[in-house]
Image (cartoon, rainbow, N blue to C red; front, side, top):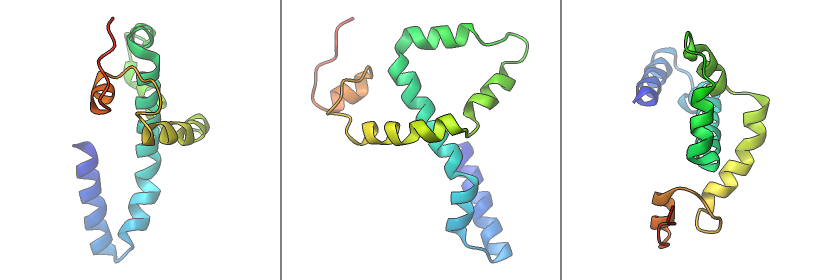
Length: 112
C-alpha cells in the first residue's frame, strides 16, 4: 500500500513538473524495491529460526532505527540482488522453505 501511494505521488509530480515518470520511479523507488526483494529472499532462506534470532536481536527501545537501516539500499543488498533475482525467477529449480512456492510448483509440502 505504501508503494502505491508513493507511485501515485511520483505520477502527480511527473505531470506537474513535466518530467519522465519512468526515470522518476526508477531513481526513487527501484533501489528500495530491490532491497525489499533481497530482504524477502534472506528471510525465506533463513527460515523460522533465523527470523526468531533476528527479532530477538532487535533493540527494545528503538527497533525502527535498526529496521530503517536494514531496509535502506546498500552495497550488500545490491550484491545480493542478482542472486535473489535469479533464484526467484526459477523457484521450482531450487529447494525453498516456502510452502506456497513449493505448492505452486506442484511439490508436496515438506513435513516438519
